[in-house]
Image (cartoon, rainbow, N blue to C red; front, side, top):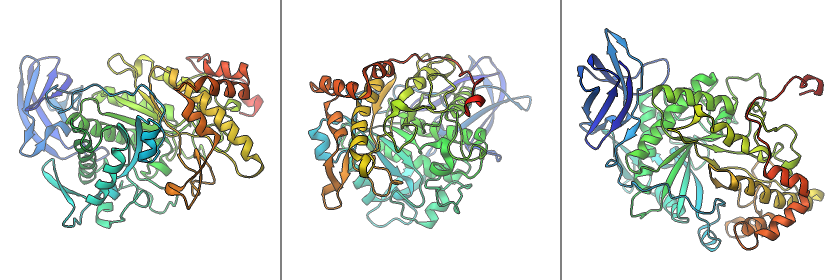
Length: 519
């Protein structure tokens, strides 16, 4: 007897099987790891008409988040384990994804975003900055799944201000104990930081979300649920949150999603659960709410020492495992947030990148070969109900150097933005193309990735605009043709035209000559 799908309705959860008969149904907490989750329900059932139905709510607890297993003769049967569908009457917002007609965006302050017609944006939201175990009289009590959690009102009001600055927002959900506004509250960190997080690693900026413990999952799901419930209201009172990127650049997990040293297979199983829980939180309130895996440019290669296989992973391998695990346990529409920086972040002339090629085994995916990602995800094994996963380019940019190379690298960046944006815009599954960042950050590893120079005395530190800002403003306007001609002349017409429509080779790279060329 195999579970084929599980649907959550307003009042019931229904399991659909491939046959009838007697079985035992186990409902459990969906923790991931060596220790199985706590049993919530265990009861004999008679499967008739190939369905089993349970009340959706057990008191205040919502079964939409549970794991379900059927046992025959004491052995677990194969099939789906998690809710795969929400009935149309479950979410208050059943509208389609509100795709803006312009894909470019930039994180400008509110008044500038309106002046320059920014349609969508991205913002970081950090769990240890938003939640608390020590609520003050003004903080917000949030009942969730049979327990009350607490949210800091001051942090919520700050999110409100950003959320309403553009028509729609995608959040980057983080779990950083030290940065991104973390209060450092010890009891909260003990509850939400991943058990394997390496506290002794100074470069472990962000922890993975804790999918190994019931306590950690509870805080995470309450965190996501609060944000979705508040920011997907049909009246858009507090703005509109259309999706969430779960953590950051998780293929370089030891820095940006630290769970300690862990085989990639185990890491992806936990990460898949974090994606799934976020999607389920979304389905309770907003049918078009999207979730994304976050990956850096390392596609078949890895960041830093390639021998550190428990710390740094191939982005391609993570996607392959994610597709496999979600198919096995219950597929859902996860998507991809990719960061196709130039091969060397110091140099914006990606058209000179050497490592990237146009095959599925390219070491890196940069602006040069962005199309490889879409072609890879268009393979049948990655489709969700016949449709390819959506892509957003959620963090990437063009550095400008200081000193004698400043003017040249700024012109490179201006030309590069035009070509990269045109490439992204004509891809069929890309919904967003941002630039990191609006203003140079003096603390960002020596890089100047802004469209504005840093001025400590100016509002929002927005100093003089660089040439790349002119390129940004020109695209999708009557000034685009002139900007394209300027960029094409700078890069070279033949190279520009080739990279605008490159031949993606849907196969593996010929590595027979790698040793001869020192690759």
